[in-house]
Length: 118
Image (cartoon, rainbow, N blue to C red; front, top):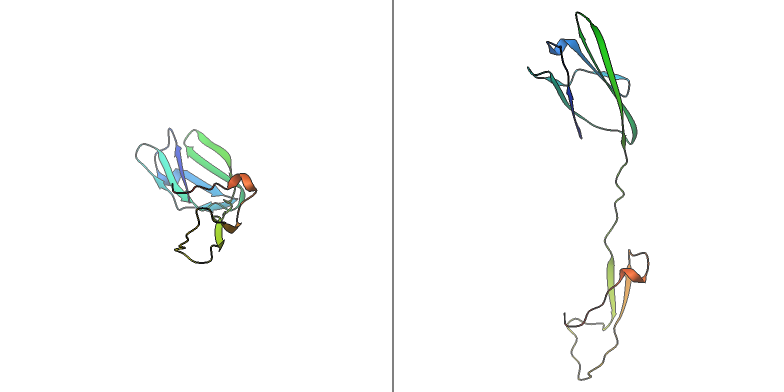
């Protein structure tokens, strides 16, 4: 949801304001005594056209704005499959042991760090 807040001047009542979202009239907005128009907009992916018009005895004024919604790309965290040693915990009498793991969800080896005892 996108929170829209528009300050109007010289407008007396809710009925004197018109809101259009993507060329569709909307009456789902609030109008405060201070002339502030507020609403929450469910943006569609891509460009959204928002238009607010206000009128009084001297005429009508319309302001338009474009809001582009770019849907966030969900990135899954890396997954590590330890292959060697095959058990956890692993006990050994050797001071050096081999470790092998399969890691998915990364772009290249710079995204991997290894630490021992820390």
